[in-house]
Amino acid sequence: MQLEGQVIDIIYKNDINSYTVATFETSEQEETTIVGYLPFVNEGDNLKITGDIVKHPDYGEQFKIATFEKTMPTTPEALEKYLSNGSFKGVGPATAKKIVNTFGKDTINVIKLEPQKLTQIKGISKEKALEITEQFVANWEIWQIVGFLDKFGIGPQSAEGVYKKLGEGALERISENPYILVDVASKVNFEKVDRIAMEMGVEESNYKRIRSGIKYGLEKIGLYDNLIKYEQDLLRVDINNIEEAIIQMKAKEEIVLEDRPDGKEWVYSKNFYEAEKNIAEKIVGLRNADNVKRIRTLREDLRIIEDNIDIELSEKQREAIESINEHNVCIITGGPGTGKTTIIKAIIELYKKHGMKPVLCAPTGRAAKRMTETTGEDAKTLHRLLELAGMSDDTDNFNTNLLVTPIDGDIIIVDEASMIDMFLMNYLLKAIYKGTKLVLVGDTDQLPSVGPGSILKDIIDSKQVQTITLNQIFRQAAKSKIIVNAHRVNEGENFISGNVKETQIDEENIELLDDFFYINEANQEKIQQTIVSLCKGRLKKFGNYDFFSNI
Image (cartoon, rainbow, N blue to C red; front, top):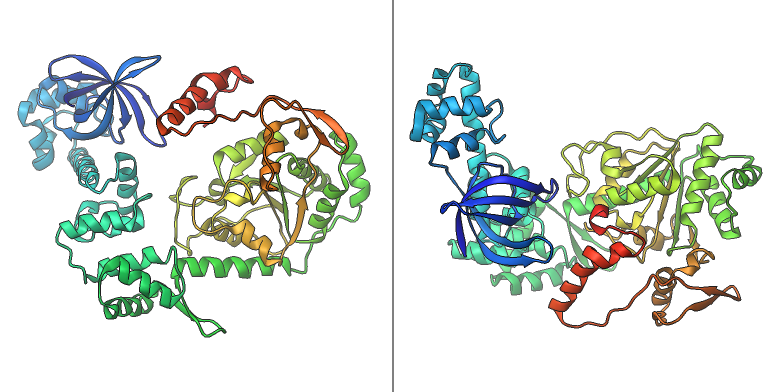
């Protein structure tokens, strides 16, 4: 189903992913509610949209957008609203009206091709006229990219990210080399781009194609001989073409070839190789630093802190804190309910007592917020803490030479460390001075990083860093079926179903909360419906939890 018309009112827009709910007036002057991902869309924009009518249980009929295309407004009213919708800096309703009254239906051509004519309008200087034209051209290029990328299966949300990474001239760069999308677009695989590129006339032996295929293969395979075999199947080209491309990529320092002592040759992406190498070197350097900041009155201080913040540390928790005191780098790991947060609280109080500055951080905004709530201290995302230029909290950046801001603190505590990928860990370690303590807290069985690498697990497995593993579930946490079942699953045991009311811990029967439910459903559509129902209604009734306010 296809509709043409104008966005009259934006009811809701998510600033992160551009999911939008808006009132849309069709060319037949009928109003309807449209929903979907609409980046760069403002009130007054004219759109050609495709999709289907769906019935929302709370809000009634809505038009769910599948694809969309921006069109230029034609009526004076539409032109005025388009020019004053915020897309053009310094152009408000009054100025927009003057422009349209002066140039009528030629308004768009004047803005696009003859910006000097805009100076006829009182209040528009030559500089402002050029600025309006530049903004128009940029906006239009974005929309061309959105339409172009649609055939690659790249939706508007990802298209916005592509434009931000490639900047001006993005469409031309993509047209010249479609394989650049594999590097800059999230959730776009090589096979999809390759299929479209071949339809565009790219030859199988094209170097850019083979290069992209090799980079794609290196995400899965590192052994040289195995990589060659994989690329032959993937690219369907002669082995000589692949080996020649590898030589060129090595010469351009895009990849690293390394001979291992066992006689086997390995291939690495340069950025991945450098990041891992830097992480290893930096951790060893921090670990071996001579200026360890030890607190001599640790045990006495802990007794006072226990009384002050009303906690009782277990022997394992004391061991963890003593390890942090004795080492510059330390890992605290354990499942839910094992007391990791209590340790963090004690460490904060301990170091503040001695006039030292603790710094709290986490990989994501949600994790940082939760850390702030549980400790009462300000916690930042790693991106914000490091002031990584041009990077949002959820943005990948493979530039290993990216400058970061040094961290001003005596001890850095990173929660949910299992979610840190290799690039973010590399940036973090670059920002830490020798002698600063680093404490990584996390659970290797939970929430892996979205980006490359299993950093926390790999560091633990290396046995090069002091690691304390917490395995005791504390009584309060042991009341939760969620926590109990998480540990049971990790241990290979069956989870406790909803009809079991008690479990045993430390030879004591504990009454369990009804916070765990198992829903047995195999149908995909029904699973989706159930999840939506839980988020919208049922979870709100349980503990007054609002899913949408917590995302």
